[in-house]
Image 1 (tube, rainbow, N blue to C red):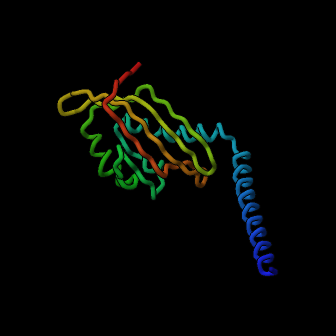
Image 2: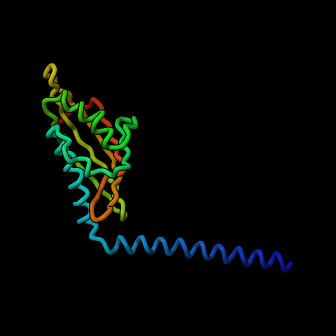
Image 3: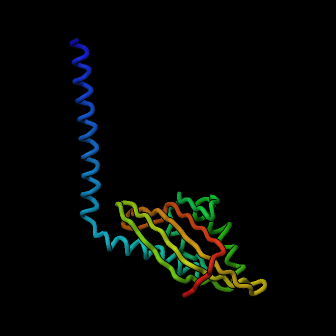
Amino acid sequence: VAVRFLNQKMMRQTLMIFNLSILFITACSKKVNDQVDIDKEKQNVIAVLNQYKTAVEKLDTTGTAKLYMTESKIFESGSYEGNYKKYETEHIGPEFSEFLTFKYYNYEAHVTIDMPYAFADETYNYEILVKEDSTVAERDGAATSVLKKENGEWKIIVSHNSSYKGKGNHN
């Protein structure tokens, strides 16, 4: 009986320590977010996304690697492309040489901040003018990204984008 009582007491103490730990972690996370200007951080994240969008429209990836963590993971239309540097040199860079123009329309970005992370989703239409035969490809697209703030800078850790031959509505 004494052993059972001690085991129950130890169990209650363990559960209490566990619960206090969870409360402490939650409180620390909330405190960090309470000390941050969330709207400003959202704008900073959107600025990173816009830098990349502008590079795509210019068909020039120069300087875009700084927007990504070295260990980033890029997914496109359900396929793993590797880290950004690999994606830049083996996929998007060569792909840009086949385009005359790339233009986004109806672009929207939404960001949620949970320091030190940000979660972004983007929706858009885009139009590509193909160099070889001057055909126009219209697509509807979406992207999701996870960013992390390190040393005062937001960088993309994971990005997934996909598109489909949709309405191509540029209104």
